[in-house]
Image (cartoon, rainbow, N blue to C red):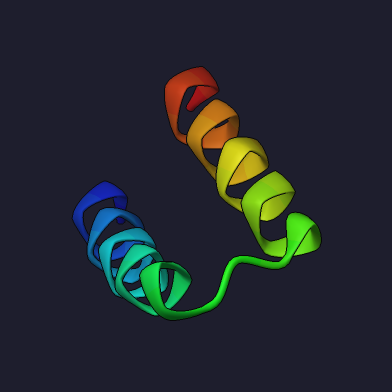
Length: 38
């Protein structure tokens, strides 16, 4: 479960490098927090 989330997060980060909307950056932070909690 955790590995799947991390791989998705990595793919998301790759997309982020191309375009950086604030909403997506916030999503990444929330996902990171969620991973840390669980």
